[in-house]
Amino acid sequence: MLFVCGKNRLRSPTAEQVFATWPGVETASAGVSRDADVPVTPELLQWADVLFVMERRHRTKLSEKFRPHLSQTHIVCLDIPDRFDFMQPELVRLLETRVPRHLPSRKPKT
Image 1 (cartoon, one colour):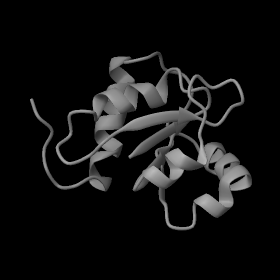
Image 2 (cartoon, one colour):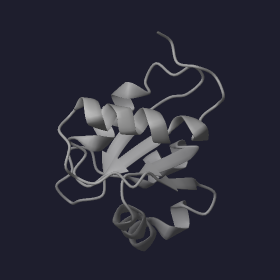
Image 3 (spheres, one colour):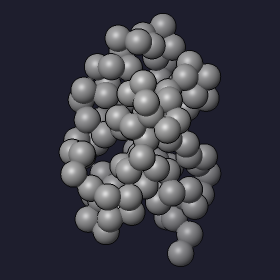
Image 4 (cartoon, helix red, strand yellow):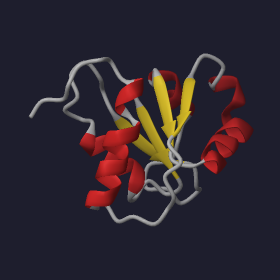
């Protein structure tokens, strides 16, 4: 699964780390901005079975730039605003509340 935010510095890397130990899934993160630490690429989009965007505007940017690569991709908007720091507990709680329903029904390792 691929987590996408704007610059791939706070929200999506947090999500990637939080779900990295979830059984049966692989995680990656990227950003839609030109100056993203890891920019979204067609290869990442083809790799991902589920694509999580933090905001609707990220889905819009992806559709504008990568429409041909999104036809078979399930996109979930998490509606998480850009007001959190990396691994901020409140962000982790939001992710743990909103993401698991879209994952294989197994509990993460503890």
